[in-house]
Image (cartoon, rainbow, N blue to C red; front, side):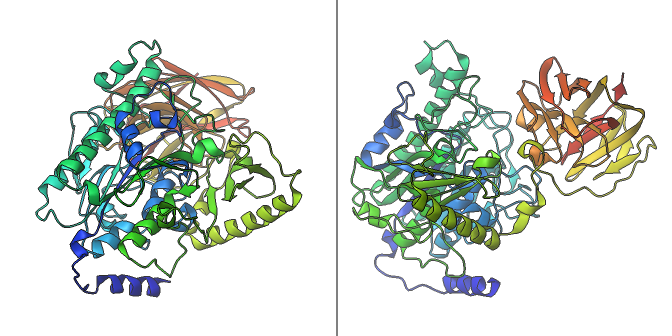
Length: 628
């Protein structure tokens, strides 16, 4: 396969014959939002949200009523757009935690690199989230995937969407940038367009907003439309949609003013459904009545807004109910430009050009989803025509729906249509096996644990220069003025064995702080365990870069799985945590700098024999844990 891929790349690099039509090759813009629900725009029926620019855009192109993301979480959906391949094939099988080994491999062929080989200039602005080691030579960065210019963050805007401090431009940290993150990203693309020396050179731009992903923060001018709503969470969320709508409008206005409108293909969509339960806080995204939300394999987790405009090629104001998916972007652009699809790998998407011409689509590969964070019994899905089958992680239990008749997935009709059920069950099992076989088996490193969690590779043994710890993993522990210091490259833990195991109840106190300039992955946690291993230990602390206090079992990939509490603090704060444990009942609570939350202990944690501290990919200082 590597030889075929190299041969394919060499063909693309051969000198091309310049034709009279070459300078008229269309431009492309893919505008992607984060956690925006299917019902989160006026043109999709939301009764309150103000989205004038996208509503106008929908009237100028084609609006899809059944547009799907490649996955119900973010990183995989992004990988599907750039490669045309379902995420478990291209390796981006999960959302990517900072510092993890997962990334979009250089062996994957992106639409950006294909267009660049055809003379296109390329730009990315906004969220990236396709590697764990962001802005590092250890993993591919946007320029390794064909981007000439990029301004990006690894995952979320920090500390939130207003005045973010974690943008990186072409491998150089930018520092604090003023304004809403989506507007910053749109302006970056606009300024890049204005600076180009040859305005007749075709371009490819991806603008991927952080909005409306947590931590949501909206500028007051966007929330003023919702001033009569008492709930601050609703005002913030709806303002966030209006905020990204304004960013989109600014970019479209610039495209018009620079004369690119008529020759530019623009696709707007979201990476997955809305976060949270939709009933509290700022996670008020709408699924438009669909079942499930972000992380779900049901429609609310994967069906998203989808609008495309290409003047003269797509009928203005048209609406299509044909199911499409994010992986269709890759083959569609290839078809438009005349680039042959790679023949050394499976391309899951299909070109949408027949649809624009009023013809039906023919798919070689079915619409398919697998999400490691979906409930175990609903982890895999496939849709063929009007029929959709959902299966458990091990493909032993299934549900069948007719989406045309039951778009809210209220009734499992497997028993009513046994022949169709047997047919789709067999196809799903076969297709799932083929997908898992083709991609890298990174997902095998994380096996299901309690409540669907994941475990990571056990860290190497570390050193303890203080003599105070019985087991140290993943880092070296040294003394500091604060107490102890640890700077793990991945995950680091230090355990002290208790004289008497805790089997009933106890209170544990710890102080911790992240060292300044230690990156956006800052964190620290108290760790408790019956055995001094990463996979078996339970952590309670703060994911500083995520603006949350958290509790979780095992590796960082499970962060927040037992508890996650939004909180306000500064990255340089000192955190004081007090943890109340009732091991006999399997419950606990924690208070961190006045912010309290509850959690359940792992079912197999019957005694606490070790206490200590934990950090992931950051320099953190700790005090001595105090057990009472």
